Image 1 (tube, one colour):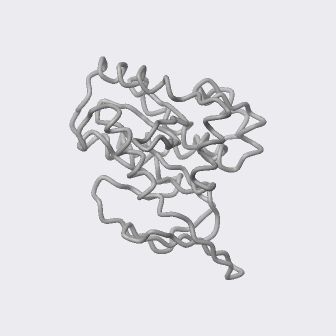
Image 2 (tube, helix red, strand yellow):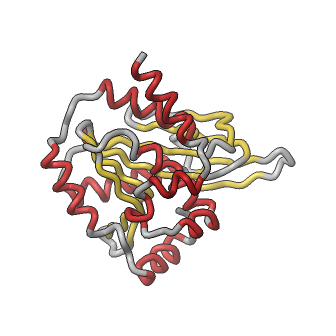
Image 3 (tube, helix red, strand yellow):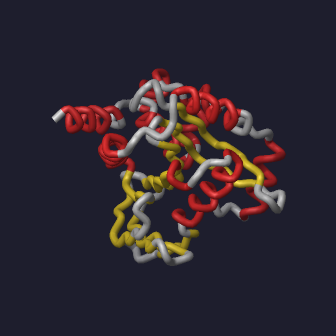
Length: 226
């Protein structure tokens, strides 16, 4: 019953006016994005909404946004949101899309379809986040068991056909995130101490405020795919 009430509270929370949420949120400090920036950018706005849900899960959890890490080949990955909690490290890929979404974990590309039958392909976000976690795991020197992958779509889209095979991967609409993650965290063992959480957070915080040159180089390298 307590879990249900907590989930209900978080679902109601995301329905509040954006500016009211923004003032109460630590998102600007974490991301460097102003209120006008999140309202002008669809992707940033979706990231903010996801962040605002996660920051109400408990003070023992640490949140980071837009973490840029280097790969072996010298290119970079950008991780939308990371939550470091006693039950593990949760890595979020935010997709603030509309329309109908069709996807299979084993397929390289997924499909976005609109009522007028227009269709667009986009790179499999599960693969995208798997690459993020691989780089993050190597950077931190931690085992696979610590990491969990969440693909979070806007409430404005419908997940028509979604096939997910990996048990540590979740794909959902944003309005389902609160209940899903609260339930997961309640069932998982504690893997990280508060000291370890703080150490990991301090390490990754060094990579969360990239300069404009790093951001542009990343965009050029991926061709806007992220």
